[in-house]
Length: 316
Image (cartoon, rainbow, N blue to C red; front, side, top):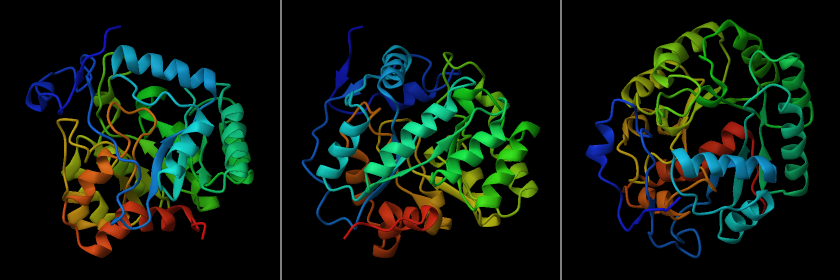
């Protein structure tokens, strides 16, 4: 397909007006300049939302994005992703992946566990397909192999977070003291997903999960887009709720909110979504640097909070 590249972000008001969601039609890539390194005046950076998949799955994922999402600016495979970010000064990355059908999770977990074992700057998470046979055992095996949490994706895996089949997975996370990263925000909605994301995702569903599973650490990416205020209010009530910023502070989507940083900055973490980006790898870091945040909030946002959530020790 022919790509449309812009030097500035697309018309946000136009995108926001579609009843089919942000991804009602593919979005353009940006030809914004990229830096050679993390801005020197930032504290140590932990990118807590980096995707690592085996080559075949990566290419299939990029094909989906090219058709339904946006042009992929960085079609890098897993080891290249680690090298790219590390060589540019990102101190540590948290590797996320997800299974889109039963029978995939064990192999994906082994792939990420092996990569983490040979890459000291990588903390890998597990995945599992909710409802698949042996789901609980698959997750236990992932944690026992040293994976530091688990990633689920309501849009791709087609489930609501408060469904009964999730209960045993939440309780295993509590048992092991490991966080779950769950894409439970309603956006980005797309007609290409197997489920209506507005039907299965809601802050009220996450509220139910947190009420039913005391002690659970739950991180919702993209600041809970698009229910920013609702998730900020939940953070005030539930100490186990975390949010990551992924793509929401990059001035690309027609969505943005600093409410969570205002009310609970100690549980908001930076993530990029690298390498599946339509713009420069450091765009969101530059935008964050320009927010004028207090030093302690900035330090926590770009690295300190993620180190606490995942127990990360930076390499000296």
